[in-house]
Length: 196
Picture 1 (tube, one colour):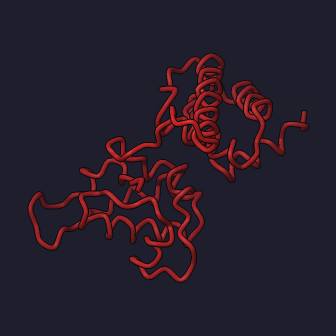
Picture 2 (picture 1 turned 45 degrees about the vertical axis):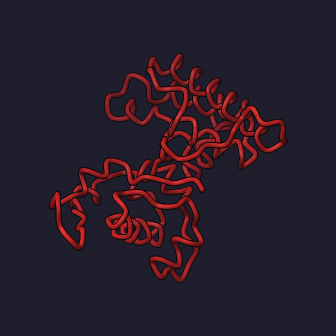
């Protein structure tokens, strides 16, 4: 079973030792661009996941159906959107697939990881940044690859957004995997590729 962690879990803690545990909901969340781009039901689910995670030190199973039952969600829970927005991250201590095992799924996962590292290296070169080639950064790219996006389209979006945003203080900070490869935003950016 793979697990997810609430990013910056300690920031959500109000009391160190309290039963039942509490979470602290920062008002700043309404100013957070990533939060504002989530669908309304995903925002509500995320807040309920924070409450759920309060009982497990910020760790939840990466299982949308299970989470939906636990938070009494009437609609499916979009964990991928929460991961892409950076609110949930993969638990590094969780058991990861053995990429050396000779099966098709592991081979495909290894290929996705390799391609993601190439794309982030390309982003680093174009944007003059130093993003880690693995972890959450790679997960954003892998999600788009699994959606069927091509390496060429990923590179083209990076190149276009670097031309448009690089050097502008307000926009330069959005030259990051979490923004560029968010499912909704990427579709919009890709749609702009033919536009002069």
